[in-house]
Image (cartoon, rainbow, N blue to C red):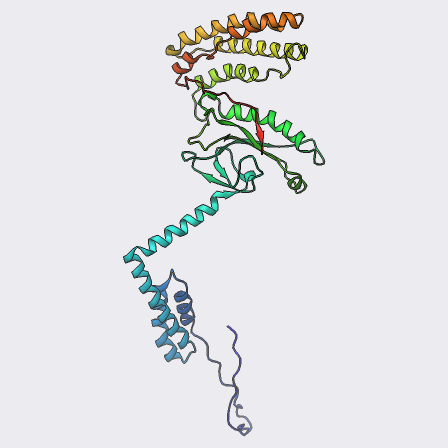
Length: 366
């Protein structure tokens, strides 16, 4: 701490005889360090007893050594005494606990408020506004509590040097997030009926700042939902994962039926039927290769036989020569496909055995 030399009263002394040392400036008084520490401890509310002790130790040392800092020590003692009294009262009345609880709650609230693009896979959240509007902030909540969305993953858009437009990114996000969500929630029947595919896209403004991230989520369309929808290798056993990976693609591809019917776009419908046929065959082969738990074997075998019969009908549909032949094979093909996609096998494997009332629909962007 800097000090300034003070004025000295009286007339200047007469120089002494030769050989004597002239009178110099009187030594500067130092400030006692314990006095300073006492004041600081008294001001800092969490150290009041320490400030009281330091102040009491500092006073006799200041007198003995003729140091400065008596006022600092006294102030430290007074502040420390008051702080100690408040501390005792706070503990006795519970006020300190209330303050600390409020402080912790504030810190937790601040930590839960994040940008939609800083969310991590597995986090559940509620946006600061409507889900279908661009969200700048979201609040992270425990997945067991009601929430609007659950993050399933994300990816960075590549291949564009300049802003490609929202439609271009939306098309990429729809396809990629469908895959991300499918891998995150393998047990699709466990996803509530009003929970759909959503995603957060970069805006033209954030793109200029380097933002390329698409965040994929499952989100409640009409109301919040509780509980995590996650069902992947981290939550399921090997048999459950193998079964779902075998049969889920049938459900996914069936949703991709072209909007135009066979009379309007025969080629597109025929290509889709061929894709679904290949998916059925792959599922049947996957179910046949694996050694299933004894309790699930009968139901898995029954499903495999149903898929074998369905494969024949879808082959007829996929090889139709024209739209008329396509329509003739259309209903038999759909009727041959197991409507429940192995509900008994799912139950035997301890998966969700009842499908949601409404299936997953088209995705939406925010």
